[in-house]
Length: 247
Length: 247
DNA sequence: CGGAGGGTTGAGATTCATCAACGCGTGTGG
DNA sequence: CCACACGCGTTGATGAATCTCAACCCTCCG
Image (cartoon, rainbow over all chains, first blue to last red; front, side, top):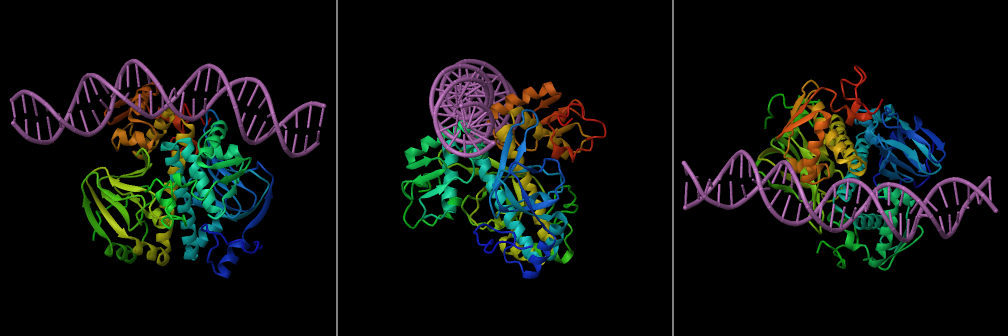
């Protein structure tokens, strides 16, 4: 079992970060690499969790379904390098979420037992898990307040800001990593309102062409910043962010 | 530093669960017990996290504030035995949340350094933290789908169901543990709609008198159950839940 | 060429927030 | 002891915002 080189070179907390060779080997030896077609349901609400899923290539979404109408609420959207179900393993209950591929995907699956055993044996691994789960939790908190108290415009703006910082703050262009329907649902709105909101973004100096996003300048998205995102932004407090609400 | 006896006798995952005497002692020796009046702000968005807070008596809420209008989004409401800021410690960023007392409270504060060091030294403690954080995350996921795809009636119903199961499924009566404003905000609605929704609950056999909730029978709330809550319900699949949407 | 899926646009309906007023219980100060 | 103010909860009328439904365009693909 081998992973692509420089698979771990990302800024997000990673499952295998700083693990010793032997520790990593133990995990990989008991894991399975698998290919899936797009739209494949890997986990259903109510299933007992069996694996942690690590996306090698492709994309997944995790979501909940309401029983009556069948409406979906997207919890997370995962790209290459992301994991899911690590948190669910430790909840001690059936899975509260569905997991589904949204593209053809290559997935590494690590069995539940292997993970639980390894947490006890390797405290670095435990810390990695803690970092990952808390990161998820942080995003969830942002989602909650976004849906509760932010306007659609603010939600899209904040989403763009995060994507922009992810892409490196020097790039004034970036791509939407998922199809618009999916992003819309993740942001708690219909595709229609998402589309309408995108047009409003023009007045902030943001041009949208298909999935390409182009910012007029590096400060176009400052308007949507908040205190815990400012801490990540390399422009914060160096040159004063023009529209920053924090000032 | 001593804790009340049988402080650990709860079904929720607890910070000090299964710790050895010496391990527990190390934690408590470096902690501070403090009393606060109601309404005291313990942590602000943007602060660097300094403590984990364990509620001995009283109540806290954690919430986020939107910059423009000052609207609040409640993330969690804590009672005696609950902790907060454990997750934030491992996010590696300024606190994304505010923490405030909603009652006069007695709080045990464990410094950040003590926690981080102890996670490495005692893997049982690491697992405890994982359990707690994943529990929070689970609740956050429920909040997200509640606000996204559930009607106010369903949100209140589900909230009641959880409180009912918390209180022990044999009790047909239980109390609202917080003031209605707060619960309303937690559920992502105004106090007005919360009040109006409470009246609708009567048609499901739920009587509300002030903060007292009285269920007509043990199945009154089955209508609001979902797959991951059913796993906790002692009535599930024994006697078939009458209105259960899962069947 | 035709169909399917994603995205956009428009018109209408619904729902919840907003605003305002009131009742009620409590605590306070004259 | 009473008057009053205050906070919380409730109720009603109004309006705005977003969802819904429908039609249309586009691209991709068989």
